[in-house]
Image (cartoon, rainbow, N blue to C red):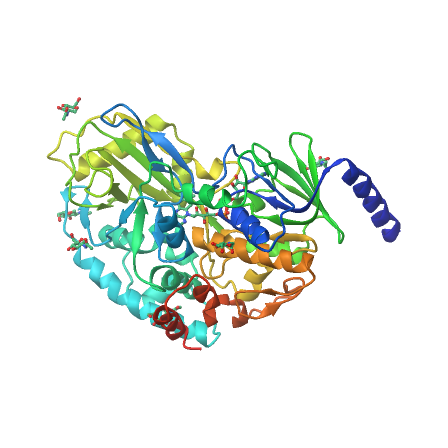
Length: 523
Ligand SMILES: Cc1cc2nc3c(=O)[nH]c(=O)nc-3n(C[C@H](O)[C@H](O)[C@H](O)COP(=O)(O)OP(=O)(O)OC[C@H]3O[C@@H](n4cnc5c(N)ncnc54)[C@H](O)[C@@H]3O)c2cc1C
Ligand SMILES: *[C@@H]1O[C@H](CO)[C@@H](O)[C@H](O)[C@H]1NC(C)=O
Ligand SMILES: *[C@@H]1O[C@H](CO)[C@@H](O)[C@H](O)[C@H]1NC(C)=O
Ligand SMILES: *[C@@H]1O[C@H](CO)[C@@H](O)[C@H](O)[C@H]1NC(C)=O
Ligand SMILES: *[C@@H]1O[C@H](CO)[C@@H](O)[C@H](O)[C@H]1NC(C)=O
Ligand SMILES: *[C@@H]1O[C@H](CO)[C@@H](O)[C@H](O)[C@H]1NC(C)=O
Ligand SMILES: *[C@@H]1O[C@H](CO)[C@@H](O)[C@H](O)[C@H]1NC(C)=O
């Protein structure tokens, strides 16, 4: 019976496939991972691919908009999504395309509460001391493959244990943890939270710059795409929404909302974890249990920037960050960031607040007017001596409701092993996956998407050319990626790909920097 039914499905798939556009590799999504996967294929002389992208332009979550007005009336460009770069392949691309960016100085911060300026900056040093000792402990747990904990327990064991009512300490903790992870310490992995932080912020240097390019951050992705796509290249389908993906051992058929379909030997799906978790794309057959479990296990966070332009800069002009401790609610308009500061967009009178997860969800249900009024009340508390005017421009994105993202970026939940995470990376037959969330080292970041896009592209090229491909671990990998039907609660470190520094050497990091990496993990 089952065999007959299966045969029936295959026959109908085969007959549909005949009317679909044919290609060798279908790349689902034109963000950093999709474009890098296509470039890796192209570099390996696989030029027959089709990139299918929902939006009217490539770039994905490197996403900007026009906002407010400059002196001449033309708008500014602001990033609603990715904004910072660290030294890694994205940094290299920023140099290649002369992306305008400037040092983001986390020491340039002033502290406030509901009474105005309130100097609790000494707490920043107290947190820092605990964080260093938490980090060492996390490194030990990783190296010895021991049980993960929450970052909350890691911090508490290291001596940082703020009382719930100590709102200044809560604000300091928010700035150091949630503002990066989008989740609070109790919902974040100690081991992989700390390791990810180490790898992004300290691996090759501690440079951390903020992008302010009028072309938008996505200019680097468009630039790389132009190295292998011609203008109006027929291999790029924009404004095309994938609704169904059916896969067999022989190939993949991708159905789009416009009624079109693409039949391919392989597909690389780069949709965000949020898209996969929201059941908006139907996979048939249903994804296997091990894959579905991995998708449900990992976390998608929301990070919301709320932009204001005023007719004047009423906050201290030479400071980049302003931390606000709400007297009642942790994470309530906790962090304000000036763009009016020298080196950014001086004279712009633009400032933005950031909220994450629970507060993001709350704000997404509100109207612009409601949110603007709340935020202005906070600014009036922070600057009681100023006459805070109504903003001349105001906007914020609703990432959780954005149908091509369903959230901002992923975070590593407590107790998620490398085995569980490897299942997120593993292919299901001819259907491969890539994207930010699949990077064990750089989840949440553009460079994570870059590394994962490249590796998926290279591996699929290897399969097509009947050869092995070099993967992060430095080994040659042939055929499919390993996955675990049964989880053993362990973290086989060979899945922690950067341990031997291949990824580092492959973008010309200096030997000293690679040694630095090796020392971090001492393996
Ligand atoms: C608010 C915010 C702040 C961030 N800050 C930073 C930062 O400072 N630094 C940093 O490095 N990273 C940051 N990130 C993360 C970074 O943007 C992502 O890690 C990266 O862009 C992910 O690339 P990707 O290719 O994996 O996924 P995406 O960019 O999501 O690419 C997937 C593509 O698939 C398309 N797609 C989705 N559904 C469909 C469908 N049904 N049919 C067809 N196409 C579809 C999407 O439109 C998208 O273009 C931030 C993200 C956000 C949202
Ligand atoms: C493709 O090759 C070019 C030229 O060598 C290189 O700059 C680029 O990084 C490569 N892309 C990938 C994804 O490996
Ligand atoms: C960062 O800001 C602090 C505090 O204002 C300042 O002392 C330091 O010099 C700044 N660093 C850089 C690199 O500008
Ligand atoms: C806010 O700061 C002021 C001044 O430092 C202080 O007196 C007040 O107690 C603080 N409020 C809270 C809730 O801690
Ligand atoms: C993070 O970096 C610190 C400082 O180099 C190191 O001691 C620690 O082991 C690292 N921890 C992890 C989990 O990578
Ligand atoms: C796509 O999936 C939906 C269910 O989500 C189903 O109703 C529809 O028939 C499918 N379309 C194709 C072409 O398989
Ligand atoms: C900004 O607007 C407020 C209120 O409308 C006004 O009082 C203030 O003078 C204006 N500032 C400048 C620099 O024009």
